Amino acid sequence: MPKTVAIRRDIYVADSDKDARHVRQIVEDNGYRGFDPDALVIGDVSSVADTFNSIGELGYTDIIVRNLHSVGEKAVASTERLISVREKLGLTTN
Image 1: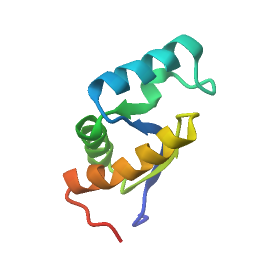
Image 2: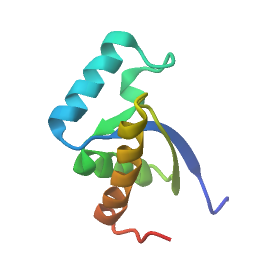
Image 3: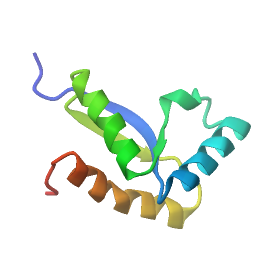
Image 4: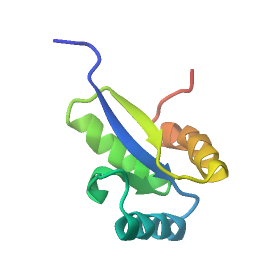
């Protein structure tokens, strides 16, 4: 059995629930790379942490992420908020 079991998710860690709903609506209206919107992880820090925790409970040890936001500043901010997601999950940053 492998020690690392990874899954990839396209994500957006929003700065608020309102921002997350807005981005999700855009994705649902316009589509995103042919993905089912339910396969994407879009939410505020708490919501994304909850989703990542659920993925971990399925047996995955690592989540490889790709930012889905097309605006550079939003994508960078989403990546920066992953630090808070890791903290919510009790993970340290290396």
